[in-house]
Figure (cartoon, rainbow, N blue to C red):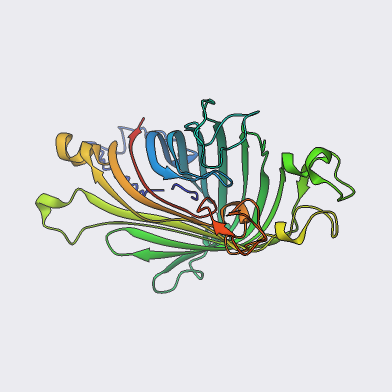
Length: 348
């Protein structure tokens, strides 16, 4: 994600019909029915997910680590926009060990795997809805929205990250066939975190390091997500959908003031993506269209280049390379993640 992982297309149709009859309207008053309250949330969708990521990576570790992932996802639509919340608990094996262990370099260890919590929030405010117009819809462009959001993360490994970031910008929402959508969001991105290696015990001669807290400079970001039912399939196969997401985040510095840490810690553009997810609507198959997407089984591909902004091409980077800074420097393949990812999601 991303976001991950991340949203389905939703629709709502409201229909009402009624009639009143009176033999003599002049003598028989007709009592009008009270107007039903309009719900605050036009759509309110909640899901629980279990997923397994086969070859996740942890920067600095010499081997990939599978992860068990448990997630709660909320999506709603209200009069002026949308809200999306995704909360994940990720459990690694010992390749990504819980602190105080340090990831092994080519040597298995008996440490417990780390546990990570990640939370993401995005909210949009549609211009058509705010201004009561349709002037921001044209062709396949459905709406333009203001977008704001935040992410939080913490993990009990040696690095002890404590990521916090905020985003703000615009979202351009486009229609795809078969009630699908394609959203593009150019954003401003600002991040703070924690890094145990930027404490006095590890920072060596670099002055000004006190507690490992990092303050990255603001940068640009572009987030993309899409969804589409495969409506072109024969009717007996119309249980499948594709979706995906991608996040591009610009360089954000080292997280410390100039001169405090080595330039080898400088970050590069980060790509965090799930370019394709194939979803099978199991509940529609077994219980009919009324229960569409109540139970989804899916498989996806995860790609994360320059994970956390770490430069996967810089041979002086001691996290991403063995023998960093020497002619024998070798990429340990821990700073770019390529993994199959599969799970089941249940609506409630």
